[in-house]
Length: 326
Ligand code: BT5
Image 1 (tube, protein in one colour):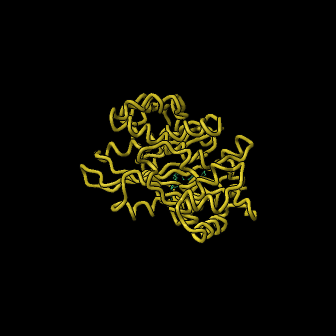
Image 2 (cartoon, rainbow, N blue to C red):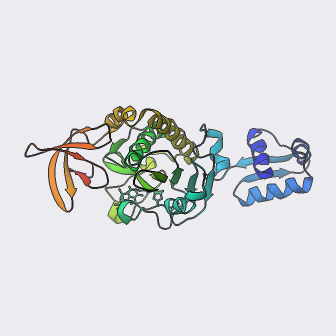
Image 3 (cartoon, helix red, strand yellow):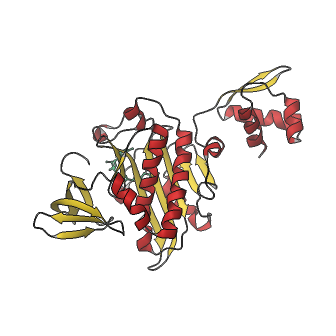
């Protein structure tokens, strides 16, 4: 796409003006075509100085996480290579499920804002404009449905690594799908599946990360946080978005080749649930026990007060710490 080519040239030449003539020659297009693209880039939010005789200079880039902005950081082979970006969408997971039958494996859907972001069991997910990463990935692995549910934890490990890499802060996993910093939730993961009893048609993994959110609705105060609140800095969402896709592809490949057991040690190392007393809520019944292990299938092993040891699969239970959220 010509607009993208022009942007790449401007990005690579931030220290000097590039004339319209140079752009025309480099790309073998007309002056009018260049001029049209420059105007489009300006209306996308790029600040481009146009100086008579010397040409164009990229002064400022918008804070958006579209493919042009994240691709310089993207190292993946297939995750996020088909990348659909929206200013506003109801829910990236809903849209992903809608297009999944026709979409390629690894397609990513990213939005600046979600108007009906969802958590598990239809819970609402707050997705403020430009303040987070609201992302869904479509996967089409050759897996059975009971293998697919483990992908939530594969994604969780990737997110913990990316947060460390980009924000330089340690987070942990509240089994099975929350990423937590200082006892508050910074990220939630929602894995949804479409398939038959023995075969997956597609999986959608939704990841919501509070990056630069400064204020939460009252009901989330004390429970939710953002990377910005925790680090005291405004973070660049672009390298973080790419890093999540990069790390996810890395762990996803390991998972597909060697199974969940190859990710298990990291899940245990990053877990904030293990070796803590937890309240397990099954069908409205609360039982208190100690989380002692995560097994090769990603289940949580809990020893209850009466000595009974139970294998807890994600999906059928809610696990809460006894003190606060974790
Ligand atoms: C989750 O559900 O944590 C999964 C969240 C997944 C969100 C992503 S964003 C991209 C994709 N598109 C979607 O529509 N969804 C996915 P759950 O474990 O059910 O937690 C939901 C609960 O987290 C809510 O009931 C609130 O208490 C809390 N919550 C809501 N918004 C939050 C936020 N921005 N940060 C922290 N906690 C939040």
